[in-house]
Image (cartoon, rainbow, N blue to C red; front, side, top):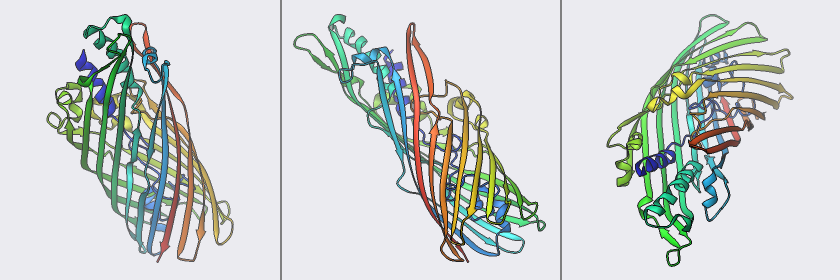
Length: 451
């Protein structure tokens, strides 16, 4: 019984992920995205990522785009469980657990050298993850397990059941994940209206998870033993993971005329086999359910990046206005995960995007956009450390044309997330209810050079 208890606790501690776009894919890789997200058919330097074939239609010469983003996210899980009322510091059945996810600066760059027919391009960005998430007071799953087990442990130590008052403990956990992607490729202008692209992205994955549960106490009404420390139940664990993967990328762009442009891109599935390096206490090392994080039992953990299809259209009714639309599909269900977690996904992630840009003056372009992201995840996939919520995103921003060769992008993004409620039958007549929420904002600044 205790073994199952410790297994579940530690598994919850170490299952944090920080992701955007698809489940393990970041689509916001430039400041331009934060002022108009529908970039799938644009002809601009950030197209090195969003529309690499379209870069072929940029003017001859060298083009460079540099971006710095600052995202901030809050994850909130409100958990209701009947035994929470025995927490002496918060004697109610509903507790709120907050996780803060942020990254001070997320950098990226795109570069391209355009010749008459051939274009060479390169980019660097955080293609997945992009920050860390910290729960300073732990999560609901951990408190549920302690609130269930500590009364049983008190009885086992000879304490009369009616003398049990409650419990307290100190919990902490943090998860960090970055997928750094460096892409190189070549585009070729087949005709004056048609261009194609082929490239390869090298992805370096780096993740770490750590957590503890300390200062565990059973509080009683028994004279002389009002507080019973439970040192045997304290846990400590740190795990680092890393690997290298490769993503082939292909794209096509067709300029129908000066008003219409259409484009598509496909990124193949990336095999990510993360190597474990862990520091656990003896209890964690002997726990079967923690084999995923135990480098003595599991050397590598699969967490693939899914194959991704994107397409888009740009329409310019007049020279100073551009209207954009796009569609993304992340084939998450086919991206292999440890212990077949991908089989708990009902279908891949889908996104629909719209955006508009207006050259208000020769010095200023104003833009805005909207994106809907829909995740199709089963209740079994959701947990208070690993969950994604469908959302509507709005962005706005400007491009400042400093000179003929330099421009500056300023963008802001805000997400409106759907709430999701998941009820779990813990035992006969006992149910845990989790309500998941998120809040997210990001700011970005970019500088573009044309030589």
